[in-house]
Image 1 (cartoon, helix red, strand yellow):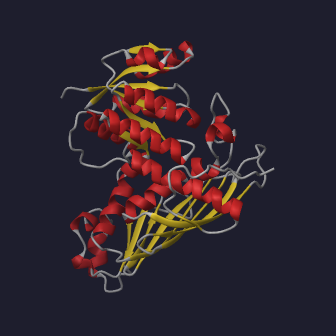
Image 2: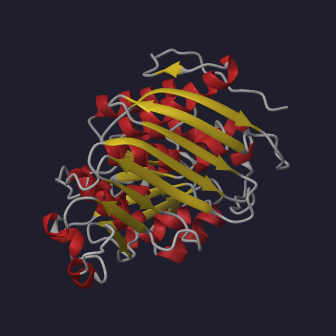
Length: 375
């Protein structure tokens, strides 16, 4: 297969996820690493086998071998870098969150549309095997009509190290816990439920960590199809708390994507009132020991799954490479529109905190961007 040439913009911590991922794909190759710090770019290139290094985006975009760019720069740079790439005829896979404001995200999508190139948002967790299996179970009606969900993600503020401190500088990050911890969960719920958010009310607070940012977040949302749910996250917990639960009329799904703990014994558990013999073979063939469970009249309807671990970043890059060549991917990645919808929810949550009320979605283009003060 003719491999698609990929350039990575930014040689910080997140590049160490994307760069090796490119090397694991059958349809992409790592052409270049670009970073203003030549030494840092060279280190990443040498470690992961990139063919070239550049110190400016314009320089890298003059290289015809670079067909698509993975944007791994700080959040406040995403719009400029994505639009420059699009105008140069290069598709973009942009790390999450897609931007700082809704208008920035809309502008990025417009630039990609006008250039006729794909724009993807880095919601790699869509590609995890347990998420794929949960999506299949929902589509097959295994848990019935969904009316409620909750998602929790907590972790210590200094678990992740960057050479710059942009995550804790609101003007550069656009937020901390609400958009760094929880943004994957917004997309996961939209993806799994095939639904969109209709309104949100939020309580965003700074509790304890040294940077004065949102380190304690709680949100209640309503979806267009009528489901209700909550998102909660913090930046002060000493260990990762990770759980997404989805509740339907025939059962429920328990899903873990970041860390399995003693409270979450498996990455995926499904409960259903659907008769065992009516369940899809893709599910019954993946759970152990289902044969024994089927023969047991006391079967409770719980199924536990340990799907094979897969590199979600590699599958994300592979889907991006297919999009660049106009090939139909077997799994649809998160588009620019998906990134926009998550950014819109974040901005609405800020408005809710400031105005102490429910905020309806969608927001209109030009809605003023306001960030709460936590001082």
